[in-house]
Image 1 (tube, rainbow, N blue to C red):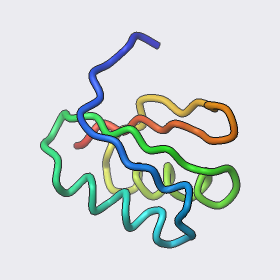
Image 2 (cartoon, rainbow, N blue to C red; image 1 turned 120 degrees about the vertical axis):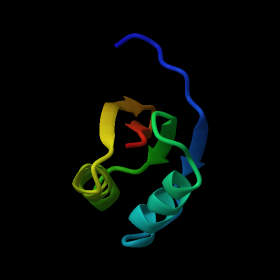
Image 3 (tube, rainbow, N blue to C red; image 1 turned 45 degrees about the horizontal axis):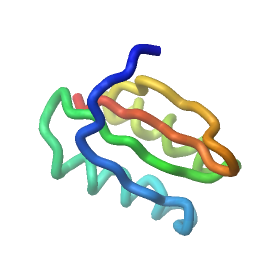
Amino acid sequence: MAACKIDNHIDITKEICPMTYVKTKLKLETMSSGQVLEVTLRDGEPLINVPRSIEQEGHKILELRQDGDYYKLLIEHK
């Protein structure tokens, strides 16, 4: 994937569900349409639930990749 400009970042590796999604949603609410949020998250429930919930909200998942022990999720605000 071509590099895109990341406008904001949130680390939810220490959170548990449903706070992983809640914190991501709250951060997105501070952003403008078209901006990109990078989320650092853990394997397991967050890796399954956060991308699914974000897409249901209408945001676009640009990338999901493993980065060491964690994952990076790039979300384009709708």
